[in-house]
Length: 74
Ligand SMILES: [Zn+2]
Image (cartoon, rainbow, N blue to C red; front, side, top):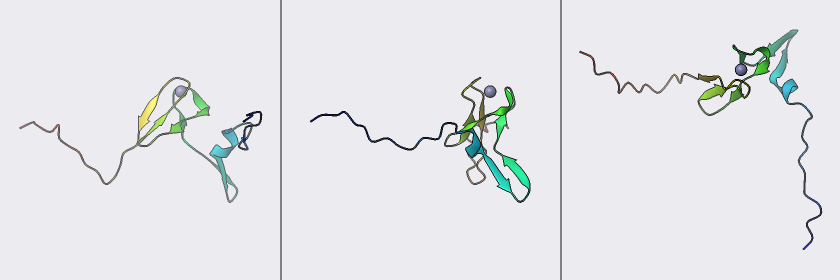
């Protein structure tokens, strides 16, 4: 079996534009990195946002779960 050809997915040259949405006449951006500034977007992980540039991580608060197991104060 020759594996000369790989099936390739259509990759956009830049993913940046996918972070922009046009709503009406407004441009809505996704969350950007507070450290790197606008232009650097945070990647979305399961429950956090992550900046691949400066490794800034921002946790997303889930509204449902409340795990307060560290409440041992009296
Ligand atoms: Zn950053």
